[in-house]
Image 1 (cartoon, rainbow, N blue to C red):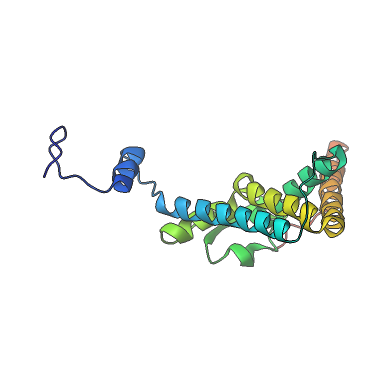
Image 2: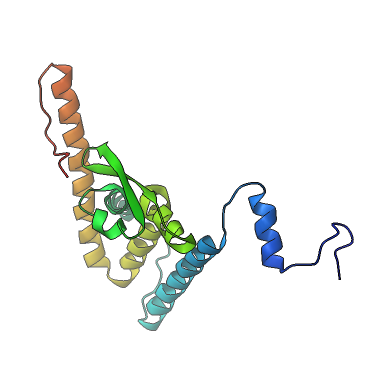
Amino acid sequence: MTNVAEGKKPTRAGEDVRRAYEGDQRKPLRGYAVLLGTYLATVGGLAGTARALGRPLPDRVRLGDFALLSLATHKLSRLLTKDSVTSPLRAPFTRYRGRAGASEVNEEPRGGELRHRVGELLTCPFCTSMWVSTALTAGVVLAPRLTRLVCAGLGAVAVSDALQLAYDAGKKAVGATGDSGSDDE
């Protein structure tokens, strides 16, 4: 049986969607679908855990928690995706491409479809921030005191980083040499 309109045999619906999406480009969707499924299963598991433990969801998020979660999400996402020290976590999925300044590295995804997609996730602070935000937000429900303490620590590191960069910029502005950070690997 052929598809009269296109003169070809019918294929699975998923393959048709993939081909239509990709066009002339190679952008496999299977790896993304696995990551999306993993994320949704994680969210479902966290919601189930909260329910099983009798942890109610808050009616609203306090402004202080929102600010703390935002700052901690930013910092932890950068630590996981760009920091030199966490490169061993990314190494199975990425290839080192060089320094990115302020103790950060540039890496690119490598490997087959799923490995490559995980590499994309682990090198993109914007992508990783969704996962980090979800984990920290769940932490506020499941273990609020510990999560707020961890978020405060991450927030302090983020503020410290900003101050270190401002200090270096100030030194450069007045003609001083050297920097306050280490870009050693």
